[in-house]
Length: 97
Length: 392
Image (cartoon, rainbow over all chains, first blue to last red; front, side, top):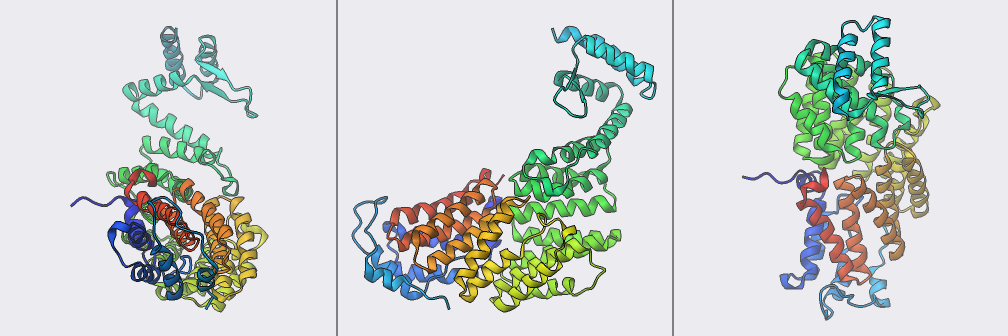
């Protein structure tokens, strides 16, 4: 079996909470063709980083707010979906626990 | 024209090679080299250096290797000794050129068959080289060292180099194996300082793998071992203890470790070499919800790291500042800080740093409602994983 490149193994096993896993989930949820449920995927990504203080781990409320923005109609990949509105911003505010 | 100058040069070399200690012979040889342009005076050098033309260097080297290996060894060792005198203090290292004398010394000692000492030299600069993205040369040296017989010190240095390659640009599993091999080799060689140093390094691997409590226990064993632990090793272990406590979310104890580190660092410790307590404080204060304190400490850490041999570490402090701004809902500030951290991670080819910052940037862009920006950040990390050249 072909060995993975060195960097990949660093990212996969060299960090707590699998930074690569977070990014991979985000990439998949942001590609509409994958058909992932955004909220579930985002919560999964957040949980992957929950033990690493250097990596952002949003609350489920924040994930829900972000998922709502992702569910908005998208003209094409690579275009900005919309400006975050006040309600979303409010939901996204997270006091540090 | 250059070929016309070859024979006088060789004549000069032969004369010189018959008796380096003979001043008259050497003087004649130098005169011959000057007259045919094979030697040049470096007017810019404060030490009035005389240099062979690069083509002649190759010629002489090839001639020696082909016709007089014994003399080649002697010349290599003399050159290695000369390069050792050119070493810069570690506190002045900023770019790979600053450790060029060590690299040249390694090259000459290796070619002379002085493998152990060559690896000892390399081990002293390996961390700096790898942190500057030059993993390939250290990896090549380790692979070369696997093919020759080494003494005890050479084996220790080889495993230290292997550990650094794996830690910064390889796998944690292999880094753990190499660190343990270095510990075993150092114990066998009767090098307790290196044993302790590598035990602290092993603890860092455990922290990265998520085994914070195990790391803390190992680091406490070093920091509480007493005065027989070499000072720089203790400073490094204290820093790592603080970081491990952060990863265990034991914020108050992390801050205590930072205070202990601050008390321990003295003028003789060359402050630019030590990891600053501010780095621990930034993460610990952020974790404890002291955002102002975290930003102040992160800013201090950035300043200290950028003017040190560990410039890439500033990226972690930028990352903490970005997290603070993200939690404060200032997405523009957060994006800027993560961008700085990711830039340093890419510049110095530190996968872990670049990955953290790209991930945090993706979240920032998601919260800003910028799907394309988030996707781009997520893909940057993904492409980094797929391109092995990015890590070399």
